[in-house]
Each structure stands twice: as C-alpha cells, then as structure tokens.
Length: 297
Image (cartoon, rainbow, N blue to C red; front, side):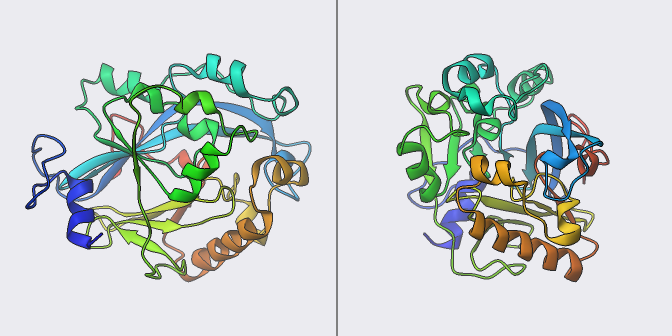
C-alpha cells in the first residue's frame, strides 16, 4: 500500500478509486489528543515491574486516546467498554482475576456521546488484550486497525488476557495493516499515517505478536510515544526492568522480545529526553495530560 493511500485511509480523504471514509471536517491547527479514562485500579508497585516496592501502592489506568489530525481522527485503544462485566465473566480465567481487576467503568463511547462528539471512523489497537479492546463492540461503525500478528493471536483461541467475546459480534470491520521497513526512533518498522511524521505507528512486538506504539507530535511541537503495555510502570525504564515474573508469564507473549522493546524505550528516553513516553496504565505519567473534552495541543 502506497503512502498516499495509507494517508487517505486514515484521513478519510478522496483519491481516485477510494470513497471518503467520513464527511469532511474543519481542519485543526495540528495534531492534538485527549485522554479518556474509562476505569482503573490500585495495585502494589511490585506487581507492576521487577524491583518495585511491596509496600507502595500505585494507580493503574485503563484509558483510550482520542487523536485528531488536520485530516482525520481515531481512537488509540478503547479502554474498558460497556460490556466489560459480561466479557470478564465469560473469558477471564479464575487464576488471573486477582491480578486483573477494575474499578467502576465510564466507557469511552459514553463520554464521546455525552459530548456529542462526531462518530469515530477508526480504532487503532496497541494490542488485543482485554483492557485495550473491551470497547470495540461499542463502535460498530468504526474500522478496527490491527496488525496481522494480533489478528492471528485472536483467532488462535483464548489466551488469558485475550477475550474472544470482545470480537465475537457480527459485522466487525477489521483492517489489517502492515508496517514498512522504515526505522523510526530506533524501532525497525514504522508506518507514517500523516506523511509528515507527526502521527507514526511503530512496531513493538513482544507483549503480543502485533504490539504497536503510537508517536505523536502535537501542533505545539511536543512529542509523545504511547507505548502500550511494553511496561506497565514508567519507573521500569529507570533500570530497564521487565514486569515481575508472574506478570511476564501470564501477560507477555514473548518475554525476550518484550525486553528488547524495553531496552529500546530506555535508549529512546536517553536520546530524546524531552519526549514523554506514556505507558498505557501508568496513572502518574498520565496525570499531567488533558482529559476529554480538553486537549493536549
């Protein structure tokens, strides 16, 4: 797929042979994003990374990221959705439940609808675990972007944190995309969705086969990397620590590959100290970011 066609898909623009994905929207001044908190939970720091304190509690978020580019908009992950209770009851193994809990839920779709926000045409998943894809059924009109490795991961059957019930509804509009062999920020593969390197997907396999990060450069020049679940706690990047042993065994598809991504994040933070790396669940890192309907611009 050529870069013009990739851009057209993400932007909803018309090219020969391609129908617009959505009605034209007034262009924004540049890339901006907003955090939608859907739920969270408190846990022991030691459960979030190897070397964490057993006597310190830390807050973990379940969030979605709403991104607006001058030519389009999308959600990066969904957080917990309207049907999370029944999904959890159907698919969460009993032995994982002590580690995988959540507080009351405010689904991203409910927050967007309450604000009369326009329909979101696409959802890009960092990966297909339960706490990132629970809201997929809440957006039946959206195109669901994921990499082939994660699509195969779903199709291979229940695997702990992957919940088949989240993908079982009729009419799910999958869009499998392939990254290009274009290095970006030390990651070997990437996909520039904006043609100006302000919205870039980067391959970060390990936590799942198709785990993907999202780089954003806002209109003001601020840089962010949303790193999914490569680490759960940004403090792990101080030493390059992995998740604690039980978490690695239950949550990481390939612990060795995940460690390679952690090492890349450590190097990225050293080489780009002004860039904020945002793990998907670290409430302390996310605390300074605007919540919907406010924006980071």
